[in-house]
Image (cartoon, rainbow, N blue to C red):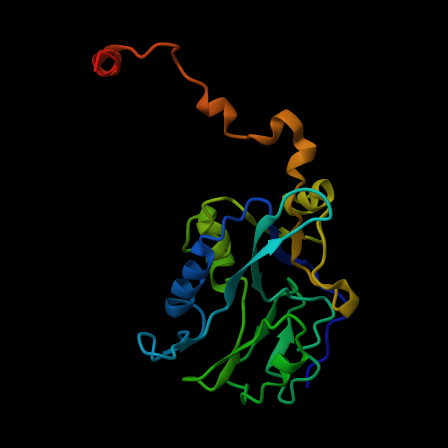
Amino acid sequence: MTALPDRTERTLGLVIDLDTCVGCHACVVACKGWNDQGYGAPLSDQDPYGAAPQGSFLNRVHSYEVTPATGPAQHVHFPKSCLHCEDAPCVPVCPTGASYKRVEDGIVLVNEDACIGCGLCAWACPYGAREMDLAAGVMKKCTLCVDRIYNDALPEEDREPACVRTCPAKARHFGDLSDPESAVSQLVAERGGIDLMPEQGTRPVNKYLPPRDRDAWGEDSDVLAPFLTPVAEEPQGFLGWLDRALGKL
C-alpha cells in the first residue's frame, strides 16, 4: 500500500465553470482521443456498435434539471473526472501500491504495471471517478494529461489537459491551486468555487464554480444582447429591395 504525502510542492487541478458548460461533450471526446494515443494503454471499448456497448472513459458529463427555491428551472451540465483529492481515499486502500499521489504536483496516478484490477480504489472513491478497463484488466482514471503538461515537444499553449484545450465554452481551467496568485485560484475566490461532496473529507483539488442566478443579473442577464442590436433600422441593398418587394405582395 502507498501512503499519501504529507505535502505536495504544487497542487495542479481543474476549475470547472458550471455556469458556462454547455454539455457538448467535447472534453469527453478529446480525453478519449488523447488517451488512446498518449499516456498508458488505450481506453478500450467493448461491442461499441452492439446492443450493450461498454467502454472506458476518464471524463464524463452528466446533465440535470435543477429547480431552485426561487426562479425557473435550470439545466445544468456536470462534468466529472478524478478530483485528485489531497486526502485521496483511493491511494491507501490499494494493496499493491499501484495508486499513488505525486509529491511534485499532487496528481493522483495509477501504475498500470502494478495494478491487479481488484477494484478497491473504485470502491473507496466517493465520486465514481475510477473505471475498470475490461480489455487491459486494470483500473484507469484521469491523469490531468501528465504526458501533455510536461511535454516540451508541444507548443506551450498545448501544455494543458486535452479537455481544457478543447472546451469551446472555456468552462474548464487548469493551474496550480496552491498558488493564491494563479488564475485558477483567483477564479475560485471571485466566483466562490466549491468542493464536490465536502462531507466526505477528501479535500478535492478540483473546484466547481456554481451557476449564477440569472434573475440577479437584471438587465445584464442577456449577454448576447449587444451583438443582436440591428445595425440599421431599415434594410439596405439587396435585402432592402427584397423587403420592399415582398411588402407589395
